[in-house]
Length: 386
Image (cartoon, rainbow, N blue to C red):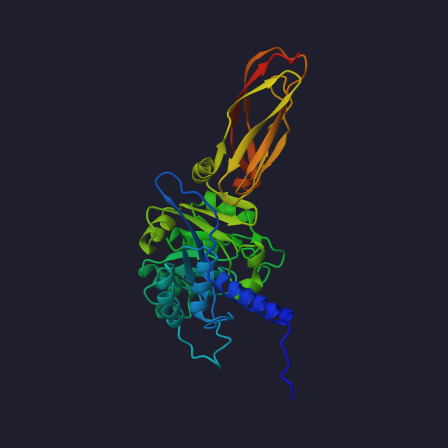
């Protein structure tokens, strides 16, 4: 039989397919952290303190959690499988220590900090709580939830309240503070609270964080593989707890959590204490030309650069000193946006200092309250061109 020749287009298609697979295979091992600046005196670390594996009701092996988190740019995660809820017990032995024992060594190879934790899973009140920085999970396996929290505190754990407005326990989705929460707060058994869980934001929880001196946290509570829960290849990102730590280490993160130096980032919203968010925004924003000259009857642009991956929505701008300025401006994430200034034709020549009591409405320092962020630029009005 005559030998069949292989068409050139087929070879090219095969080569292209192989190259595509190689690029995709390489791409999944690339780390892509969010761009978030450090602030004076602290490193800004990206963390997720609420994750699940197959050792409770999650759907992935523990070391995959480390791999996913590293690729998505996290500095630290906590493995917090349920103690009481073990739906895979017919397929896997109940072993509360194994998830961390499997995830931590892989995290260490990647430079990811993996923290040992557990979810104390009880009906409301008090609901579900996480304890992290445990030396052992097993002492928390006890019928009385108070004894579980005391056992966690005895190990120096950081304890926080999970998804306080979860509809599985609050049918209307409204978080409520019960006497049991006052009890554990007063006993030193509550240090933080999730103001964001998955894609849900709880303004009531944020108010409590400020009022009761709790660390505000944003957690994924992830159960599925990350790329099924979040469209990571399209730029989607699970919630992030920003931790302002003195060093990148488990001890540094623990110290920052107990000092309440955290902020919660979800989607296009960042929430936290004003004294922490202001320096973060200040480190992200640069006015490239704080002084500009514009002829009467002309216009010019203030160039505002944003070094973070959080778009910043400014309000409270508007007309000033007889010049026309937009009332709002979105400063693009990782880019430079233009604030247009128009000078009416009959404006008298001279220098003008424009001061704007601006607010960044998607950087919340209290429920419904944006970060005040004054902006000042100097405009020299030149005589109109002949």
